[in-house]
Length: 218
Image: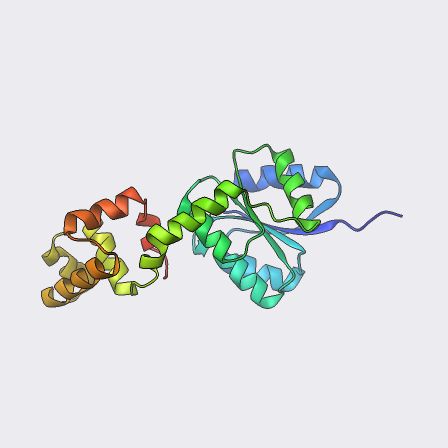
């Protein structure tokens, strides 16, 4: 008797990548791609309609991240597995995926055969986090993420503009706020991030490659 195929939802906003993954996964025989989406919103809607067993998703999408998909899909159906596939190897991404309780993070540089193998492993109940990934994610949270989590959206916007080299006057104009408000936000940023100067603030952002993180919702 033939076993039912694993129902997989594929999420990636790069058509060529999506097509390649689709063809390889379908050719494997025991996994069926039941839908393809290119955004968090589309993936969430499609998951509610198709009820996948596992979601294979890119980390960086036009309207959010694979971690967002993990949160939203699991809020609908808690049993769904989520495996994140990414072309980047960033500690920030590892923490977001871990915090969202993704089943693992694998890299686009991996052979497609390893991707289908990872899908099978997850469906068999395995979590694919390596010890190195777990340590890097925790270290990022301890050194960076815990402080970032205390920032307001406005403080994140100010920090991002400081890192881009904007003067206080330019920040005020860009955000439509007064100079006094900018100075207050800067003071709060130094306190929350345990930094001593504007220069340290800029170095902090670039050292930890936070520009993408700062443009997301807290």
